[in-house]
Image (cartoon, rainbow over all chains, first blue to last red; front, side, top):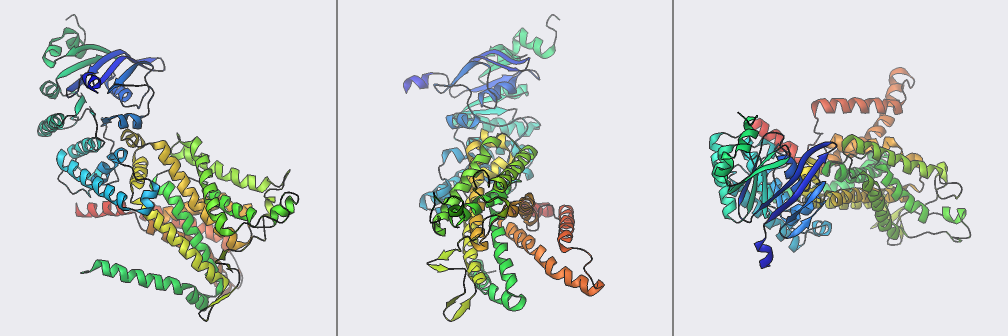
Length: 260
Length: 364
């Protein structure tokens, strides 16, 4: 056990991903330590979301392997990785739009609960208790992320900022070890970003490791312990934010050129 | 309003009493033929509720659902009629004649197996593509039933299988009138009560499933399959489960149909029937059990109302039958669907989510 705890939570080794002839990721290696907030930045089209999708099982990598929590994963389905403890949100919000906010979070409890068809039909004591626990936990999580509207509100009727928070609540409901957020601050105003930052710090303080893709440099700099920069599918820098910000390669990638 | 629970109880008992009296009232007012129509309406309700699991909850558009009805019907037709004894005298000298209550669970399992059989190759398909494959599956089953009379006469082909044993409850055949407490119950009444019990069971199962962890997972798949799987839902297993559960409902309904009718033939299981059941689900309100029941009742009654109403009406107006009620049925039916889609796109009784949605819109 001690051994596993000493390892990085997530270790990527030479991950490569091709779409036809296009190489979206090549030879990306990085590791995420337990309990840190790890930022992933890069210009548009740099392969951030692709890397994200590889980690969460939506895409299968063509090369390399990754280890999570001491186990090696290759060609795994998303639900297997969710079971292992990786939960995610989506860049373009993907809630269950026609279900209520509460139901959205309750669905996140699916993989930590057990009731099957017979439980549903018999509705026995174990099932009833489990249902009650699911609803209770879901309600708590809604409160935790700061959604004060009634849980019966349809997900699609929440405001944009609330929808982003609901996605986080739903991901937290899966009891993750690693919470992977794909541009959670996209489209948020300064106040909303500030409270998102506070929420992420609170989540980290509760012991969950956070992986963050973000464009908002201020948020990254103020929040992340370490940052990796992707450009054209390659990792061009990694380190603490201040260091990375001054890295000439990073500046070149963002501003173009490189010699000027 | 003070005691909603008590009120709901009263409504329930009144509804139950009305349903129990329904065959007698119908018989007295409209004639025995209408009791038979009510029996069929309940078979359709069971079918519609089964399809509602697949389409309404899990969001998998199935255009060949009637195939499972056919599977259930032929299960009982083969095991409860002299057909096999006639076709293979050396194998089954005395016929098979399994009792209905043994065939029923077996038929449900076989139909569920066919559900998985349809589900497995279509797991990666969505929307239109899934619809096309399921449509093909429904036709394959029907065509097989139609042609499996040679080289081995398994299904007796287009002639169908007749002389299927009637359903027996506690050693009482439902095919003859029975006298209970001095009241004479004709056969159609007996079947009515049997089907009512099964419909109640199917409604109960539907409700329990809908409000369960499994039901929520199905709805998650319907809403966004990628997000569902990222939240740890094993979409493959749950889709197969939805197909299997829906198919089992269809199989049970089919078995009851075969016992009730005493005769099955492939023409009962045409594509039109699949469409009809789907329309019941859509017309009533996809995903809402009460809506689906209403849709089932309306669409099962519509052709009969037309048959019994339009012909005499035309006779009275024009002195002859100008339009055949059968063609009128499709015309009215298509018209009704178009009007529906324009004015009540969520169905006659929209599901609770859609209703809530409307409420919130008004409040906003």
